[in-house]
Length: 314
Image (cartoon, rainbow, N blue to C red; front, side):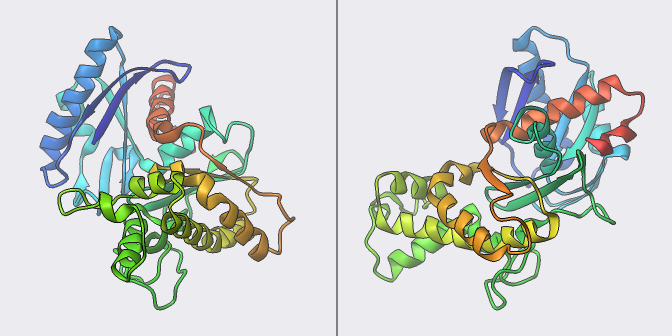
């Protein structure tokens, strides 16, 4: 889906427009038609006249050149994202990596407002991470820092899309949660979820969250396991980065209350070289709008600065 919105200077979403996308669509069509149409619809209904468009997308980017270098999820390589958008729309365009936009959104409007050092973890179809150190995004030597989803948790675990085995992504992402439930049901576990899923309606992490709210024993057990796996990964992050706060967002954050107790317990048990309980682990107050609001921050800064190079400080 494309989630387009017109956002004011205070971070309020004035109007939003959703459009379904086909990830197999050619970049020129997806950006120049589908995305452009969603933006045009939001702008028209808002009655405003924005001048800058911020686009958040997954993958490795070169923001200062407006390029999407590699995006495995979209199947893109060397796509001139900004050029395509600016040909289709009467707006200046800037592009930012999706987790960087989440960092910007949390820093400006969310749980990162009052702290200089924090980590964002986005849990959805994949697990992404981003690091803010001393009020600035930590990018690493080759702009790859923060790949929390690809920490190895199980040495001989399932193969990950990255080519490694046992990555955190294979254990706590949305598909991983659904897979754990399906496997347990196949082996004979009793659950209300066995009545919900079908070939036409596959099991989703949202269903697992709903079942947990209804007290389903299997769903609660799976979320407990998610908390333990996530705790293993985040204990390493706490030990190395020593953040003041870890912010959990993405679609699976709706289940935060179910996996948070074991997550916090696991981090406290394993991160022994930092002050106990120093790092707060909290859900994002922005929900799924963190990246959207971060795009607004990036666009506003682009509007207020003479060069897009300053975006690397967002």
